[in-house]
Amino acid sequence: MDRTASGWVNGFFGMLIFSGSLPATRVAVMDFDPVFLTTARAVIAGLLAAALLLVLKEKRPARGDLLSLAIVAFGVVVGFPLLTALALRHITSAHSLVFIGLLPLATATFGVLRAGERPRPAFWIISCIGSAIVAGFALSQGVAVSPVGDLLMLAAIVVCGLGYAEGAALSRKLGGWQVISWALVLALPFMLLLSLTHLPTSLAAIGGQAWIALGYVSLFSMLIGFIFWYRGLSQGGIAAVGQLQLLQPFFGLALAAGLLHETISPLMIVVTIAVVLCVAGARKVAR
Image (tube, rainbow, N blue to C red; front, side, top):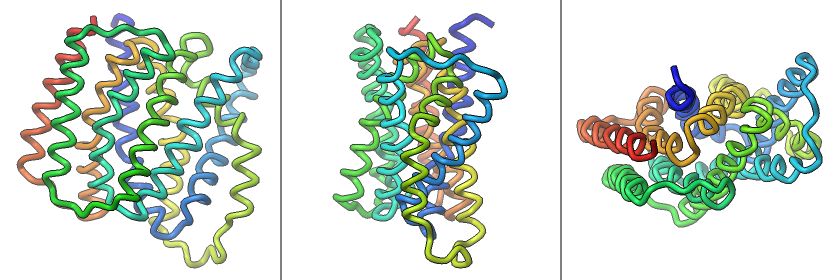
C-alpha cells in the first residue's frame, strides 16, 4: 500500500471514530455541564497521552513547535469540544450534523493558509457540491433551528478546521499521535484546573449512559481518533483526505438512530451514495 492509499485508510478510520462524537456528546450533556464535559475529556485523554509519551520516551517538541501545538490545542482540545457541547444544549445531534458537512471546506481552506497546499479548481467544485449535498440533506429533515446553537456550531467548525490543518502539517514533522498527545499535555494544567472548578454537585445524579459517553469522547474522540486522522491527513493530503468528513454525518446519524432513536430515512441512503461519489472524485482530482 502506497503512502497516499495508507493516508485514505487511516483517515477513514479516524472519521469513523469521530462519527460517534456528537451523538455521544449529546448523551453526555444531558447530565454533565458542558464546561465540565469538555475539561474532563481533555484531562482523561491528557493523562493517557502523558503516560504514553513517558513510556515511549518521546523527544520533547522544539520551542518553535509550541505555537502550532497551542493552535491544535485551541482548535480540537478546547474549542470544538466546548462549542459543540454548548450547541447540543440548544439543538439536536441530527441538526448539528448539518455543520459537519462544512468541515471539509474549513479544513481544506486552512490547509491552504497554514500548510501551503494548493488543490486544483476541480477539487474545490467537488468539495462545494459534497458540502451542499450534506447540508441540504440535513436541513431537509425539518429539525428545529436555534440561532444560538447554529452560531456555536459554525464557530466550532471554524476552529476545528484550523486544528485539523495545523495538526496535520505538524504531524509531518512530529508524527500523528505525538501531535495530539503533546497538544493534550500542553492544555492539561489549564483543563485540570477548570474541571476541578466545575465538578458536578452530585455524582449520584449522573446516569450510566452519560459516563459511557464521557469515556467514549475522552478515549476515542480525543485521542485514538486523532492518531488515525492526523496520520491520514499528513500522508494523503489535508484537503483531499479531509473530504472523508463528508461521510461523517451519515455514520453519525446511524449511531444517533441507535443511541437517540432518531429515524433514518431512505433519502439518507441515496444521499450517502452521492457523497461517496464526491469523496471518490475528490480523491481522484487531488492526485
